[in-house]
Length: 246
Image 1 (cartoon, one colour):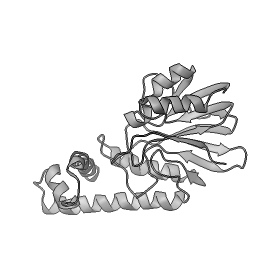
Image 2 (image 1 turned 45 degrees about the vertical axis):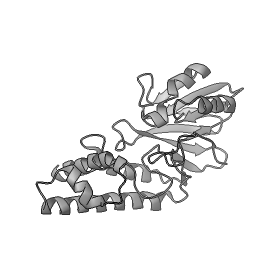
Image 3 (image 1 turned 60 degrees about the vertical axis):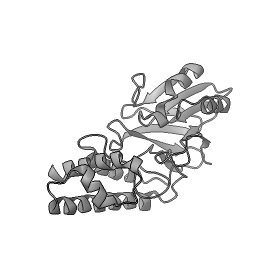
């Protein structure tokens, strides 16, 4: 059986069809990535957990489309905030877990998309299915996510893909896009895309060593890249150049 999903009405270039908030358990419930601070979304989540004995709010990272409603929702439900991204969040140590009535959730550090980013690993006690909630480490469509937030993020990201693959999950539930039914194949595709981009950036920069990141964006991505994505693309290229120089 799959976890319940409540999708926020916040579609966009980075959120795809909206942030997907997942709920594991019924009497003892974990709300994973509560999503943006939108009244309609918060109220929908409150209704979903009505009557629960215990509620946790879990955060994979602190971006507003994932954690924006975290504090508000936790206060409304008298819930503990677990994970990373908010000052009020408490991380799980190795060996610690969230014990829902649908199975235990443990936490795995998976930085890269953001400096503080975790994945929640779930083994469904009803069928022993191994699942994970990887936040924005991977998306439900395509073979890339944004990596460019901080120095060292590319190396962290590649390590995190390997760390997630080692869990040997049967299914992944990303926060954007549909569930991933082929975790291993998808994770290899994401790694292949990232390494291909690294090679491409290295080749273009070798030919134009004086070019700025903004200039490299035009060469690498071409005119098809929307103007409002140029800044994010430039940050990604800068992070890739840092990786190549390290």
